[in-house]
Image 1 (tube, rainbow, N blue to C red):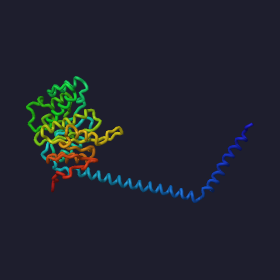
Image 2: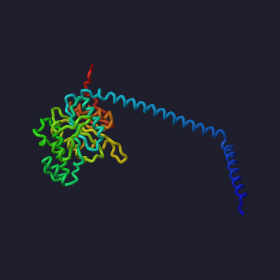
Image 3: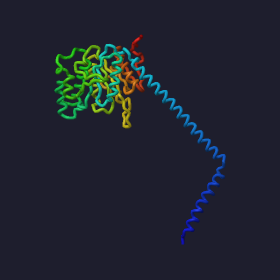
Image 4: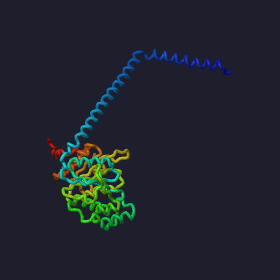
Length: 317
């Protein structure tokens, strides 16, 4: 019969076995083995502490370099775009703060930037009504939606790249008609007030398009606009405001597809890191470089972060 005394004896036997096992184990392993294990543990801990210190120094260096780039960005682009009108086009879905920061830097370079032309999701032409609205706004008669969108976007690019005087009345302006049809929005940027259609016309015009993957506008829109700008004999650059995602695509995919579309590779400049300070500096300088008749591809993983020959004339005092 199992009673209380049996349980007490069983518990005591377990603890006694543990004690004996511990003593025997320590005797068997030996002090030397224990010392060697402790030495290895101390070495691993020391390596980890050293790596942490190294990481802290690298982070400190990185923070200091970023602060330096931010503090000197205005000087870097100074007078690089004096007398140039920059018409900025951005895909809806692009971070507005990034767009504002880029516009501010263009203005710091001396450029007149009237505002931002936002490309709206309506360009997807998801309904027959939206397609008909685009036909009315542009005067096009294309029936197939991709062809209609490409042709309309090309007209938009031609309008933005034009250096001719604005039309006599605002209602005759393609920008006004596209605003009324909700395909674009004309917006102020970097603290400036909202522009009107006539503000996007003037001599020495260059166009900067800003976009990236995952936005609610069709992928063929930006290259079609760029082709239209080239039709108007105006320089054009495309900047990617990249946002990393586990679902992809990688950084190069969107901007490379733009550059390769419709034979644009040797006719436009591209920058793949406009979301970074150095990318915005590179974009500003690339837009300036276009005035020299030179195009290039800049950014992370490219041959150059910025144009190799900085087309700037810093102000001397």
